[in-house]
Image (spheres, rainbow, N blue to C red):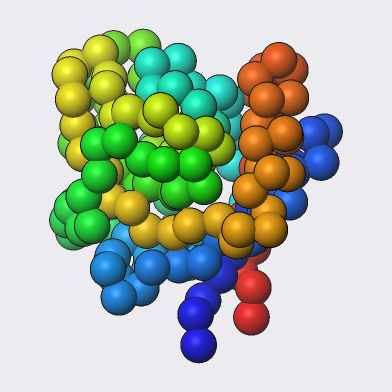
Length: 163
């Protein structure tokens, strides 16, 4: 049975189910599952450099204890995510331009809602782990909500496991 998480955001009406790609990215899926079980709202914003993406930067110190950022390796690597793909990117400690949450290392949960995505950061091209895809019937709603979030600014995402 395929595991899934729901990502929601109240102001925009976002409610999208993402199927985890456990066979292709088991470590990243375990981290995403741990985030969903934590039930802590996570701040997100529309990405600046990567195209049609909602970016949820997560500092290492704010992650659930079950997630060891230093143990995560690149899996199912992608540089150009497609619409509906969820990419987990690990950042080592150190500044990465204006993305200050990563000074101590961390993760970026990238939710791509349109085609033309790219993992191009101020430091150059990077790769992330493609670990989930939106349920096809939720893609249009994801795109609509993400465009609204783009206009409204910072939002709070809620992740929850679907069992």
